[in-house]
Amino acid sequence: LVNVTVDDIKVQVPEGTTILAAAKSAGVNIPTLCYLNLADFGCVNKTASCRVCVVEVEGRRNLAPSCATPVNEGMIVKTNTIKALNSRKIVLELLLSDHPKDCLVCQKSGECELQDLAHEFGIKEIAYEGKESTYRKDISKSIIRDMDKCIMCRRCETMCNEVQTVGALSGVNRGFDAVVAPAMEMDLNDSVCTYCGQCVAVCPTGALVERDATWDVLSALADPTKTVIVQTAPAVRVALGEEFGYAPGTSVTGKMVSSLRKLGFDRVFDTDFAADLTIMEEASELLDRLTRHLNGDTSVKLPILTSCCPAWVKFFEHNFNDLLDVPSTAKSPMQMFSAVAKNVFAKELNVDRKDLIVVSVMPCLAKKYEAGREEFSKDGDFDTDIVLSTRELARLIKQANINFNILKDEEFDNPLGESTGAGVIFGRTGGVIEAALRTAADWYTGKSLENIDYEAVRGFEGVRSADVKVGDLDLKIGIAHGLGEARKLLEEVREGKSMYHAIEIMACKGGCIGGGGQPYHHGNTSILRKRTEAIKIEDESKAIRKSHENPYIKKLYNEYFKEPMSHQAHELLHTKYFK
Ligand code: HC1
Ligand code: SF4
Image (cartoon, rainbow, N blue to C red; front, side, top):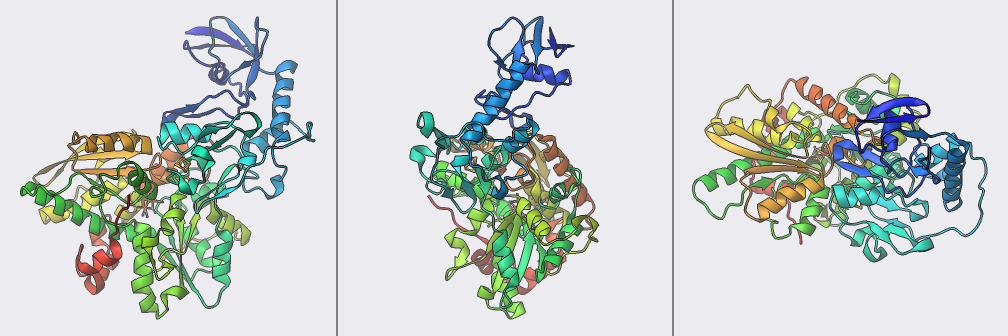
């Protein structure tokens, strides 16, 4: 341990600790901007590029960036001298001088870290006028890149390259033209970007934001010729409340349903229902591949990989296109829901599929991209019409003057609103495979098993491996969350080193609860664990916790699909992957 004094407070910290961390342990919060420590992601962005966190160190002539300077024995640090404060203020003024002054209409207004600092520092005018750097706006289906607002903190780059290992973003050009962009400044659309949205989740300003579709929803709801239905993803219910002042980890399912009804949706349905449907197909595929493999069929590919995360799908299409026959062919729950809605439910309603608008509320930005994939359309009509993120739904509720906090809990509509505990756990890492195991174990043993809590697949480590017994089968299950972790597992599969039978992969840390469209965590990743806990409580509170026991799923198979992997099921519920 070394002895350090920060603003006259003495602390002992381990050797190698940064001044910033030492100050924190002394209860002194030094402001930061580029710095970001996402402990649960194994990611620290300390490029020391913004210089907001500078402090004076006794005996040194220059100010030190506290995020990147380690302490040493006897160090005396002053964080609030006039020299440090003045320097911080000038840095902010310089950043603002090359930043658009459109805060009033910026999507990030109110949640922008630069705006917050400018406010805290009492900056009342733009001190330096002059030329501003301008770039072409890059608008993809999921994300808008407005690099005029980029402050070169490089958080997005660290996230994309080090955590996700996608490599879509890097600093290009020099001086005034320097910008963080895909190679050769191409658009995200033409790059290897997976639309995971994790860069958006950590961007401190409005440089990276979701493509907002709230107005599309309002227009659809106002169109009397359209029937507008909505589905809500498992992870939305445990995060939406944060936008209305509820503590992280508060589940607001009933209020969410009631707010959607107030917004005017004709039916409020649940993606969890379709998660149960996904399990019917995925668990069948798992058992089918397993039994054929055990019977010596060498054409069978194992492990089977889950396929419900669209960023993950795009990642393996780019990086592992020699393994396209390994993932399950099951569509994601969102797409299964929409396929059933447009092809089965529309007929029940006697509505033409073009007049049925399917809106999805997702914790994810890649879902916007997924909805626009050609294979999920029929004669130019997409199965999923509009995707809103959790943040956008909150915006919509506020725009419509709905007092969310006083709403009474309401139930989803049926038939596409009934779900089991297995459906809701899709929202957290390990949940999809646990849901599949609950069903596969019952089917394989021919019994209704009581022990359905597969603790071994739960947890938060980036890559997990679990030995699970299903009847007389000893299964090895792999779980990865975060694309960098997924890459490690996939490389093992490619090299033939993987002895897993099934692998679940989610592109975001924590699974969908940590999706790029969720309320901002501002670097406090303990929020993700609280959302996970809320998912657990939702699961345990359900009367039915196995997908194949969902009565409406049984009805759908009786009346339409007949059985999993039937011809009808293949037509509506399965997909293909592309190089
Ligand atoms: Fe997910 Fe899924 S769990 S992908 O993480 O399989 O987004 O929540 O909706 O489709 O169900 C996201 C969440 C979500 C799908 C389901
Ligand atoms: Fe990288 Fe994901 Fe951002 Fe695309 S969305 S640039 S893959 S972090």
